[in-house]
Length: 450
Ligand SMILES: Cc1cc2nc3c(=O)[nH]c(=O)nc-3n(C[C@H](O)[C@H](O)[C@H](O)COP(=O)(O)OP(=O)(O)OC[C@H]3O[C@@H](n4cnc5c(N)ncnc54)[C@H](O)[C@@H]3O)c2cc1C
Image 1 (cartoon, rainbow, N blue to C red):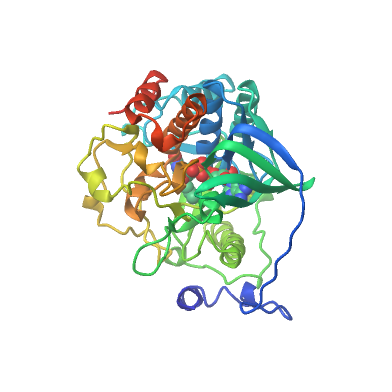
Image 2 (tube, helix red, strand yellow):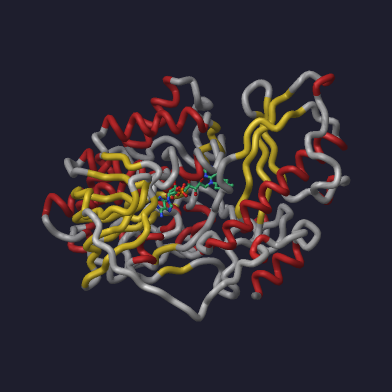
């Protein structure tokens, strides 16, 4: 209720019909049902990676490199997560020394002439690439590594017996099917597997659960001035007529004849079905308003070319791991004997309760020195055969505001894949591994742990 009131006050004029009040549909909280159904245990692998964002792809490839049979489950048509379906299209932070798998991604993008030239961070803060080409590069890499890829396949539920996942329910075009693996890696961004299996998770800021804001990414094409015209019919959306009425809007070139735009959409919950539905609706409405402002008021010769098929999610549900990375660890540049990844990016924590360019911390408190992430942050509390990597790893909201960047997520993914592969080889569980051995493989595979 608190969240809804906040949203309604923030965007009262944009929500002519709140999406959760569709006529005739009632929400039931007091009734429940259950059913039993036999399904084929169709997929069997040493390692199952759930979620095919950058963390999932690097996890799957590195586990396969260790000799494990690997299956990757992704609910959308392409892998890459935020970077492809979310339209993000740039690697923030340091792009060298993130590990062999990430190096291969960069090399392949370079072969397609689809990435900006290298410059070290912070000289270059974000290395732009072509997100359509990235989707191709990632699928080809997964196939090269021999990963069994299941696209259009949603992870639905997990069976947990004595803190060990014994099977997962996935559902794709063939319908519900079972999957069994020795080791599981949750790279869903929302800790979907960890949550479904009943292990502890966290989300949002402690006082009210509000998460880092989402953003809608869209792209415009430059057209000849005589072809330029506003696209939104008058009266469909509340008009923005002054620059100071715009939500936080980031704008940068996209190729020679286009721009990418990113607009801040705060106040939604990535781990709530109705809230995500509302976020997508709000994201597209705001896109049309912002586009209309630029076309009508600033007379930009733009045509809308592409809107990312899903809103970009910075923060969702996260696993509570054996260690929770904090902002103090980042500020101190803390070193860990079981370090498996590093981060360098500043605390990019956009304020979650307004849509302007505001940050949780004052500007002079955003910088952090290079810091390390310990293996214990990937070990899910109590769970025997589950690791969590990428933006659903164990960190506080502010620590995540830096470590969620794709380069750091890729490093975590590679480390999780290495640990899962090693656990299969040694017939043990990840928390029984010698973390120093995990670290040394991570380093041998090209990750530079500052
Ligand atoms: C608007 C925005 C701008 C950003 N800008 C930058 C930037 O410029 N540079 C940068 O480096 N980082 C940026 N980031 C951060 C970065 O993009 C992400 O944090 C990072 O890519 C996360 O990777 P991930 O693999 O952990 O998660 P995700 O990319 O979220 O991938 C998770 C994957 O799991 C899949 N999945 C989820 N649930 C299920 C399920 N139940 N079954 C099957 N599959 C499932 C999803 O479809 C998705 O493909 C930005 C993020 C946002 C939102």
